[in-house]
Image: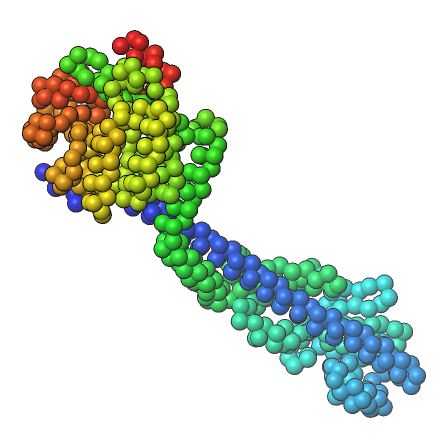
Length: 512
């Protein structure tokens, strides 16, 4: 046996969950993109800094090489003697901010000469590049050279000796990397030759490849994984907090925003004459004649698109445009149906009115009705349907409005009986001429397991009060027959007719 579930699908919650999920995914993707951009920018800046430092040393090295060569030529030095070492030492002391220059004389294949003495020529070494003026870059492979680090030398060959000065080293690069929190490994190529590979195995999406524009160096920098993740989390939180704040403000202001949005749409639609009226017949099934019509507001945009009434009617009833629209509906309906009303082809024309509108301006509505009556409009054939979509706050205002309407000959109908705020209290407190049963109860008649005890109770109430009873939403013959058996003879619904414009209503009345 399957157990009943307590969880029910809620479309509103589902939509909110989907929107929240999309927002979080957007924030995640955005934070990843921004952190990657910032990381790439920082790694590229470090690569540029490394190359700028190298180029500064390279320019100084070229100048130093020329000075050393000029000194050796001037002193006619052709091999590594004590006098040569002294000259190099003097040069070193004068320019003590420069690295130590090395000299390899052509007639000495076994030694190199410098300010700190004579050294055996280290094994290995490789020429990486050479330009047309004789300057080149040499890779030092011996661990004893230049602070026992891998080194790149700038070199220059003349007739007597090869002079070279260290211009780049792993130690110099690591000093810059040490100040970079985001940096992990590095890989360096010189003129296409691999030179340095240090912790270069990493996420290819967290690395940059920078080819220097003014040198032969290519730098591949890999980000520190933990620092990268921390950066992404920081960016995500920095995006999330303002988003939560904006969402909270938006949630708090959503009613005002929506109210303002709809108000502007209502004003625009009214100015553009996008509103129009249709009329749904109410049929007296005892004689098959049209008893009256209910006036329904419709909204059509210039594109021809119809705006569903259910999507805006609750908002419209609370909008400041509603009193103006109600006056327009009253005058338009009485103008379009004037001849039908006066000839009694239609006994009553019903128009919806909300409790809020009555409470806020019942005097204005009554004054407007009196004005129309004075100008020959059949006001005495109007019937106002009080909607129960809003609670009643001023019973006195309701009494005054109903009393004023009855003095003008208007009828008062309670719409949607049984599903609104007032319920039985409205029926007891106010003097209605008619009750309208909501279509939700009519649908239940199609289910043989549902007993129409509520409809029976409304029939009894209507008889007790000696007032009319209308059933709306009648769509099938079975519903119509059951309603007649129950004692409800005034029907409104698609079984008889949809809501029609005034011109189509006239044709419908001729065919009835």
